[in-house]
Amino acid sequence: SPASPDPYEETGDAGENTGRWTTEEHNLFLEGLRLHGKGWKQIAMMIPSRTVVQIRTHAQKYFQKLTKAQSASGGQPVGEVFMDTRPSAGDDYERRNGSGSSAPATQTSNHHQA
Image (cartoon, rainbow, N blue to C red; front, top):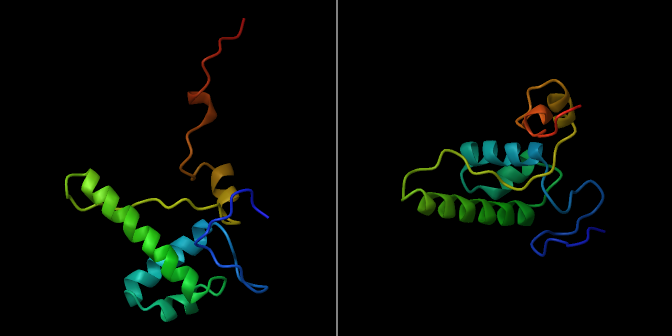
């Protein structure tokens, strides 16, 4: 079990994810919001690994982050907020092939070789 379990996440049956959302699940959530608004049951049908309660809770956190980011930008609309997600299975492929968003390690090295 994780060291610091998220009190908002539900424990589920086999086939349901618990804990941190994957990037893929979050992207499906965003797509569901675009298509269905706050129709949590319809969004749940798009994300079989999450329950309706988990989706509603994730939405609550997402909207809180959106509101916080908007007030930090002086009330200007915010394009996107980033949730704390864990990588989906396909994210490793993107990182290896340079299409991921992480900075190359060469930029962080300050050591000189003799």
